[in-house]
Image (tube, rainbow, N blue to C red; front, side, top):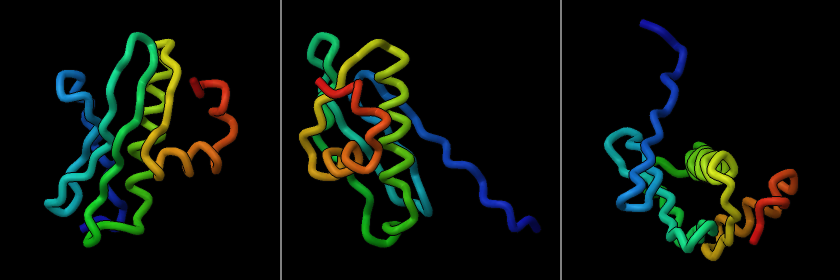
Length: 96
């Protein structure tokens, strides 16, 4: 048995406009709407039983990295995403 944590497998479903991962059977997500070349982050959700593990941070960072790779700007409208950008000013150039 290994003590090494398995990396989370984040899935980007562009049709649903969602980044998601299942942790201990719980669905965690960052939802967005794409308006032209602007990703509007509308919701970040991590159920309480798996909260506090940094999952929302990882999902948001992954979403931001995808947006950057696509040449999109980002408008964070959910409170978590707004706070994330405040805590990660190095991504401020992506804000719409």
